[in-house]
Length: 218
Ligand code: SAM
Image (tube, rainbow, N blue to C red):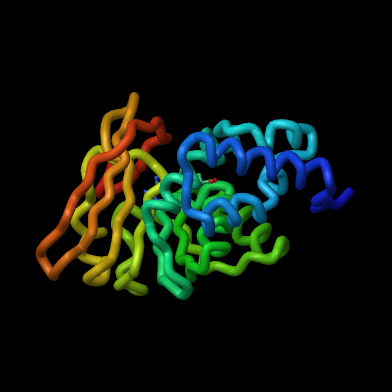
């Protein structure tokens, strides 16, 4: 039987509660909260696990990877300060949930995933549920030079250091958001490119991501 994408009152209600929970946890950006309120996160879960979809938790999506915790998705999106039409590179497509949230806040998304099965699945599912992005399969730790420069870059896996190559692919005035640390925990880092070789760096809260695996990563 074909998988059904049904968004009924139960899921809509659970999504509203999730938005309230994220507000209480400190997410303030109205556009981001609205986006979380719109994207049907249960579409990224097997129907058996729909009851888990609106809990503020990460969840396995196969290939040893996870759909990020909604708080983390909202937190990273808020830090990007997306303006309508911003060209955004997302490194680590995963389930595509974060991709949909970025699209809802007005971004044009280029997204890259190294796991072929996840790439194939997400490339099919997103257009089917109404979200259009440019999908790529490969090592995103090198960025995607062909489509650079980007207004914003978001990395959704934990890196050992900030790959210089990503800074080179940012426009002046652009922002990179990347978790940096060891295998156990990472600090969220934002870097604003103020001039061709000038950057303003902020180190924020602690998270735990799956590793960014690649030539400029682990
Ligand atoms: N935000 C995604 C979501 O909501 O589903 C979750 C992303 S998951 C935490 C991180 C993803 O980054 C995984 O799917 C992993 O395969 C991918 N990844 C790790 N290293 C990568 C790399 N070098 N290039 C592209 N993707 C990578």
